Image 1 (cartoon, one colour):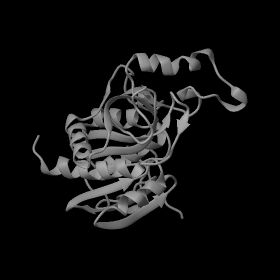
Image 2 (tube, rainbow, N blue to C red):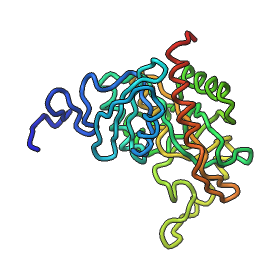
Image 3 (cartoon, one colour):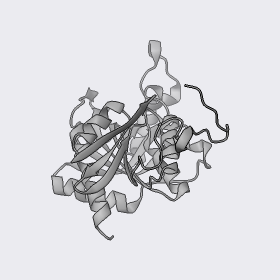
Image 4 (cartoon, rainbow, N blue to C red):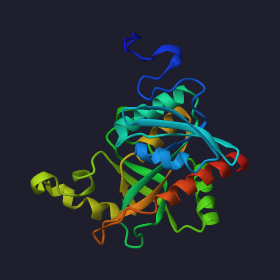
Length: 260
């Protein structure tokens, strides 16, 4: 494929976004943001109607309807850098409201594998949001989306927790795991304890980017995670992702239909 554009904001023909390969009319205002492209299929399969839009690099996109609410889903890949690209290009196409649907590792004693965490804000160790705005700027979830996620979990009778997440730039040393050949630095070992003392609930990798960009661009965003890692008991159990998907779908229905 051969094409040309300006380097400031590269776009292909007909407003087609360079990375996500979506154009005007492809994306609805409400967008779910999983990291894993495979999870896009899981999400779209729960809708009443779905249409495959594009799959390029880590970005896989569907649009459709759920209970008469128009939704889109676009995977972000792992980490803040690719997440920022997705949000930039989705916003260019008219997306206004975002819910990150992910997995995480819990660090508080009262949270176990299979629980859900609704993110009210995030510690900005994501490595991407600091390229946008001073690190003192808060990564805060939109209160209407948080409320809708809480109502969804209540209606679905899911066990959930609401609080602060820590978004990290790496999965290993950034979350107090050992690197290759047991590599670590002295400050890696204390990170979990420091976050626990500050009341942080979990580690993940994208929420701070989503919330920061939404804040500075006047968009609305929130996040919900299924706990797959219990860092206190050294347990990893990859199940229950369907619960965060169901809650996010229902939350967008509540968000779209209820005047807060």
